[in-house]
Image (cartoon, rainbow, N blue to C red; front, top):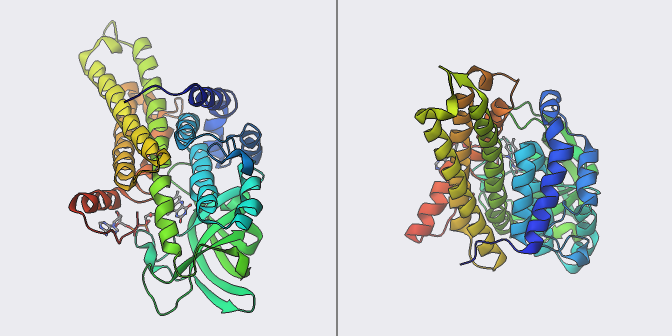
Length: 384
Ligand SMILES: Cc1cc2nc3c(=O)[nH]c(=O)nc-3n(C[C@H](O)[C@H](O)[C@H](O)COP(=O)(O)OP(=O)(O)OC[C@H]3O[C@@H](n4cnc5c(N)ncnc54)[C@H](O)[C@@H]3O)c2cc1C
């Protein structure tokens, strides 16, 4: 067992940390208030190789491993969880599945611009009537000359407003009502229309959009085999949720760091509040739970890097890290007292941002289902 990061992993982590401290953290409160993330930030991340960390160099990526990408997501999310999810969805839910399941021609055509950050990647699965039960989706792809006419609507699609590439799932076999009969397509953002920008509890710098589709999609845009796209969606979420777990660790770490610093400065009853055992226990729990979550996340990433099954390990990492982040960001507010509840400190933002990690890329209930099925040895049918 080796807990040490390689020199390359440390270098990438340091690069992401210094960029996040200089270019993201100082603006995070304003982006949260304004509900906007300047696209130049993503271009700069692209120039540094951070939009394609785990993409091979021959496809214009940085050529690092999946764990390196996970380290980047934690660092970005510590500064701004919205930036973290933007990069996570772009990388693990769009670029990587094209790399893994696409043809040589699709890889050559679509991956390099994504890895350079010239366009931003999206994963378009959820619909108004199909969330956890993604196999119930009704967006349809009807065969026409040279391809399909794709019609339907998708909901809460992260990054859609930035423009770029979408990995989109539609039903190609009308006779089916579940995961069978769904195919995966690569669309350009000019093939979809943004119909709504969502107002959210947190994660305000991240773009969350509803989209409508009524477009011709050519045969060469089908990824994998026709009617077998659901498998691609599930495999994508298997890896993607490790990134969301890293996002949760980053958010919790940010909250812990603020709480720790504050506890050494705030005086009550003539003492630093850090001298009170009640506060010490909170800080100890935060530090321990963040460590535990990160170890689960790194184990899942390591399994993925080794090509081992990682469904169960990824679900455990996401479940624990997301619930930990919700718990510990609330504790951070408690350490800061009234100041924690105000916008003078960023912990209230961390608390709002943490909640989503229990919901997207599979809710906590679905993660428990995935883990239980792995334990009980049943094939999993529900969405993860
Ligand atoms: C900010 C944000 C960004 C998102 N980004 C994307 C994106 O980029 N791409 C995309 O495709 N989707 C995206 N989503 C959608 C997200 O993945 C779904 O919200 C999530 O999968 C849950 O689906 P749902 O909201 O429809 O909840 P539902 O499926 O309606 O679930 C409602 C409740 O029922 C529970 N439940 C459902 N089924 C079961 C079951 N079998 N057993 C036990 N409990 C169950 C759920 O856990 C939950 O508590 C995003 C959502 C948000 C809010």
